[in-house]
Length: 343
Image 1: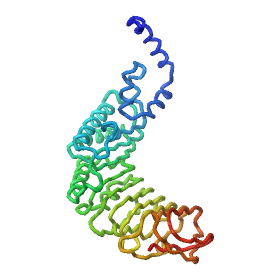
Image 2: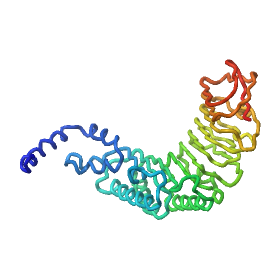
Image 3: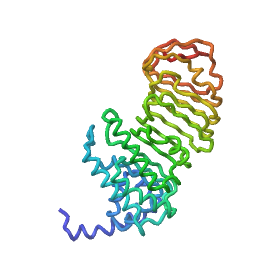
Image 4: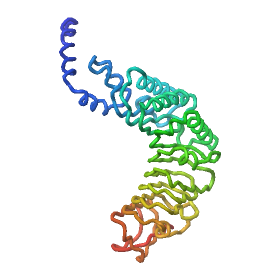
């Protein structure tokens, strides 16, 4: 066994090995680990002590603070404890005077729990007001699984989210990506919040959200910078894209609609469309050509019918498409031209 004296003698040599590495090399190592591990590395040596505060891009994910292995059903207490740990980590990384360099991008994923939002909000507000933070990628998670979430719970999440943004409006100044889970907008002005307030938003993802039963979401935002819109299992009867001039990608996974679920107006930049859904609840038939009416620049179309029957005929030519991918359908498709009916 190595004696304490010998062990102590080797420490300066090991530290010298770290000290010869350039900051860029050490920071590239830290980028590959989660934030809790990155903070712990500051204890390795004096050379590493200040490095976590030099990272230009931060990713703080509450799920990294959950028990390992993470259970399928997460207990409420585990969510609370994870948010406690996340809050401590955020306070540490934003602390002054340690944090001197600008954070170009902050990816922040947290549970939508109001008691902790009041701690996170001031940290973000201060960082934005002092020009310490440029771009914010915010993901607000639901602490319940989608199947366990009631309408009252979804309404409460919406109120907590609105209260957070209302209390810390400076967040809107650098919010470029937003992901929402399990939020019901029936009591809120959805369009005003997501487009009039989030003026810098470029990427929006909605998961298991709705705005009331069989609601129509009309988007008319000529000044919006939104380029990517992702919809996952949201209960909209239809989405009317009246005007989104910079929208480039639209992905919609799983809808329940009696009619054609999409309509397109002024979307001149839309080049990539991905649709994935099984048989509609009402067995409504509509043509893909009708759904795509109004689009002029789509070059990549991805369709996933999840094993459902699809009827086709050979009179609609996808003349402007450079890529078309069709998954899990039962049909005989023409090699050159086709029209697709959702049935």
